[in-house]
Length: 345
Image 1 (cartoon, rainbow, N blue to C red):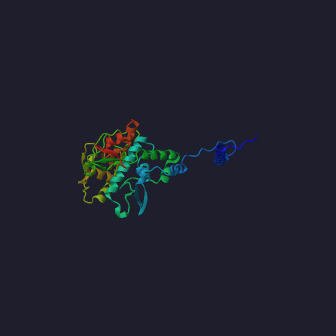
Image 2 (cartoon, rainbow, N blue to C red; image 1 turned 45 degrees about the vertical axis):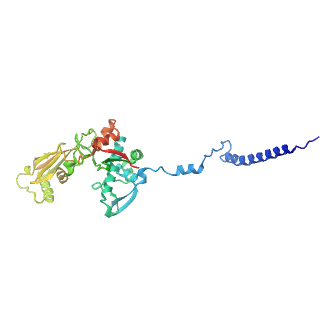
Image 3 (cartoon, rainbow, N blue to C red; image 1 turned 90 degrees about the horizontal axis):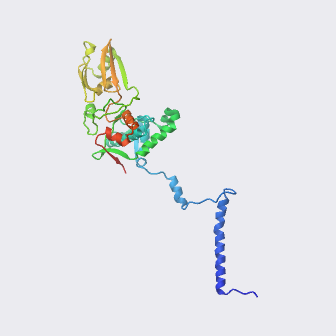
């Protein structure tokens, strides 16, 4: 004979039925998700927090370089705003060969960042509505990424990634002296030692003094020659210095050369007018102030070593140090005496 369940049993049966119904309803959409990709494919595993995961994937990592913006004067009054990272990429790509060692490129990135902050502090382009310019004669060299890619050809992707990595790996790194960004000047190639800022610009800076520089054998045009006729020299001198006396034997037009401690020309008399080595370099279009001059057969011949003003970091010297195992920190503290490398935050 059939027996009706007692009250407790009824309660348990009702609860069991409810639980089975809930389980079936919850399982149905999961089974449907598992079949969405086709038969035989495993059920998709959902992230614990889909919204958080999507946000992490869509939001780029915030760095110091990407959080700073500056206005760049590109020429003819055109000003473009960009992040520090974007600007530094354009500078490093223009200032140093991308074929250089990674540690040399990192050193260049820190130089460029530091010099940018120093230059921005001077407010030299405030009247033009800019923080810095793209003129290498005033601020730093600059190249558009598209133009750089065209110049690199087949090496474009590798060079682009290499420079991007150099900037990323030194994000926010700046050289300071007494807590302030230094005037982190640099140049292409040196003699066996760099020059003291005092000898070039007349201003002494404790971190821009002469130090040794290991220049490699791969430096292009390390030794160069400029040959000018007597008429060419006379024209250049008279246009720049009308009071110069160029009478008499041309062999005596250039005289009284003095040398700095690093072996560069400190000063020289040109037609009786005393000029700095830098002024002579500019006047005759020489690659550096390390030169000798001779006069034969009515021609002046300037024999030149290195390229650039000689103050701060030698780029080819930095590349040689990097190839020999030096880190970018080693390179910078060698060329800039007594500086501290700080992380901006």
